[in-house]
Amino acid sequence: MNIQLVESLVEIVSKLTPEDQKLFVSKLSQVNIITSSTQKQDNLTSAEKVAQFQEWLSKFPKSNVSLPNEALRRENIYDDRGR
Picture 1 (cartoon, rainbow, N blue to C red):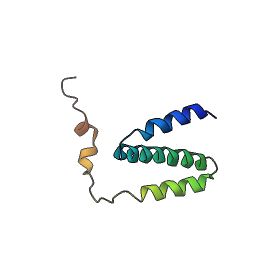
Picture 2: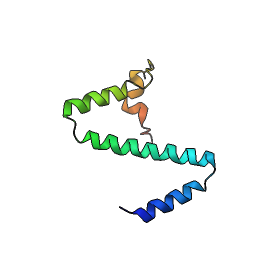
Picture 3: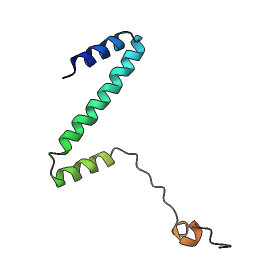
């Protein structure tokens, strides 16, 4: 444990404006969420990981926009003229 480093960080954060302190706490909590989420991932089965991924995907907005088949044809994607 690095007590001196933690104490230095506390001192620095205490000198920030209240707005900057809120930002710091917000960023720190995001890091904690990512770290704890990654640790939990290690203990999941494959089926649980798939379910979690599908749940994450379901949070994105749905769209009915699609490209016409012509847009996916190679000759319409790459300009092969002159090569």
